[in-house]
Length: 234
Length: 234
DNA sequence: GTCGACATTATTGTCGACAATAACGCTTCT
DNA sequence: AGAAGCGTTATTGTCGACAATAATGTCGAC
Image (tube, rainbow over all chains, first blue to last red; front, side, top):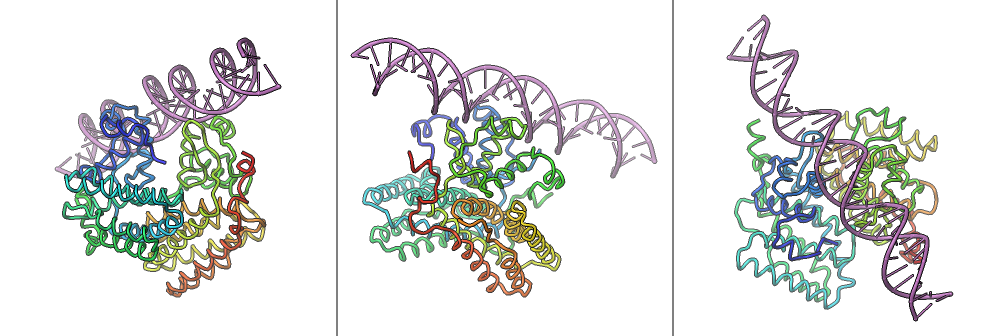
């Protein structure tokens, strides 16, 4: 479903396709190099990535679809500024979608797919060990997307792409520490339950996992506290 | 949030903006004038609506975001062909999102908003009485979107736009009769509970309402039965 | 007659140039 | 000094022309 043509290019070369550029910006947001409220000028981005403005425009609409940027007519795009309430909405819905994914997945889940999933978690461990932030973020989101893809449910996969993106943004905006909490241990525990064909336990592990991530965030108290300085001053 | 500039134009004149054209195509799909699998050629649409191909392109990406069309690279766009399983996924998620909308809405719901909602239901009744299919479809979806908008939750609103579109497509694809079942009576019942501030009952009414719509569909048995003839032959 | 290679057509993808709009700075008046 | 009006600049929106790709039709070899 995703652009996997030339994984080499996506890893080494400068991003040139719409998907590659969108991923790069997504990572920058998740790494907090791009903060909520920051302006994203089309010409600037076109210059940076060495592509036409038209292509940047496609990137921006894709990013808006995934909730990472907000565009206003004739005014341009900024990195989205999610509120704490919105963050709670997203986690709430995500729990439901993820549970549905598991329910759909557990029906037709063969040994090969399970191996791929365990292999993915192994990659997560490597990234954690080497402290490769960018890879950690990509793989953490990728795990949940992989589940949705294996479930063979296009609609749910689309939902998950959206929700994973938004979760990255929320995590970037509201976490205080630098540790990334969508970790391999909980993923592996989930896989064990899937391997045993125990849907109930798998779903419970998933919900627990997501609540763990949510609880690490500073969503309490004043919802506006964690937002960009810009709004506070203007 | 939606294009409301010149409601007159949107009602009388030929659609020219991206939103207007997208809405028109959405209605055509919901009315079964455009069937799943039908090809949507850019040049053709540009000719029909008298706009540039670039604009049609924007329309198609918007429609794809809402699950109404599916585009393949270098191959063009067709009206999406949802499976019965996908339909069940969509209804499942929609129930959760709608309940969340109500939970968020019931906090800050004043008399004015309630009046607007009742007025909306009144319009639904008029459309039903005059058997204006197009208006019935617009208003039925509009009611649920209105709830989300009043809830002041952008994320949930975006979800609902997506889900309402997809539900329209599903309904068009899987219903056998011509009656449209997202009716004013159940909407009004829901409003009564909201007026009383009873979230539980409101949510229950919503779930019941959605299950009612879902149960009118022919999702049982062979999931591929209701799909386009095209797939059956190839 | 059927299959494959090639040419032709149809359709989508990309880009750069221009138009429309909003943001900024300057001047002027009170 | 502050504010309103106006011209300038910066930025986004739109379009038509061209390139790239896939679908279709045609011809020839066997």
